[in-house]
Image (cartoon, rainbow, N blue to C red; front, side, top):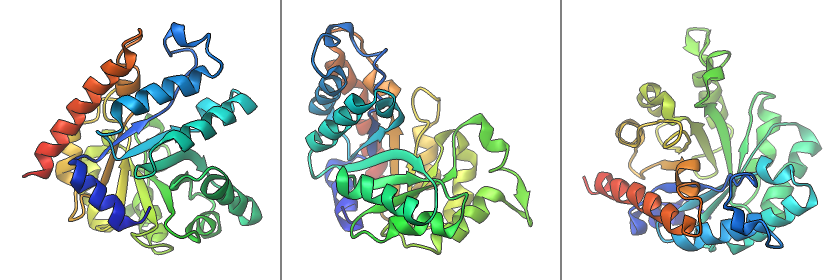
Length: 268
């Protein structure tokens, strides 16, 4: 999916909601566990209930990899089931160099057909560039994350600026706003306005709204640009809104709440 298509989808749906399919086999409703592929069954129901409210789905690969081959099969079924007009994110946080990085890119972009993949830039330019050579595919680079441990390195000063600012400023020069996004945690909203000055045109993937307590209003006010420039992710708050046979309907209620709030901000 290219940038123009993504921006148009956001405008058409009056939504910049990304739903995280971080599907934990231990948290899904018990009545699904007897099915041949309970993870896919859960994801399918969530997608069916929310696909008109969001513009992206993010699949955290850890929840699938831990299930071995069955997990990878569930992941593939899920990606294939997501409507083609919706942006897909492999939240894999890959970060290596050379052929290894190239094959990671091939895995997610070609084998599984994701539109984007999250990438850790710590090893430098040659860990990110292999993800930038695919037409209408995106590298989503870790910038300022929402976890407490971000203070250990990301928020340390280096040469007069925060390390996360240096990383984002430098990394942005390797790609373009058409093939690179940045992860900026919603719990770091106080820094978002400054980050937007550093990289004014890129999209931000924003985790941390919902279960982690980030403010959608604050992140929108400080992070939105002329193309909206935000994909705000909610995972647990949506997919685990209910835990009985009405779990998908409950998920829709929460997702619709986010979408309606977003529509209000987009109309201002």
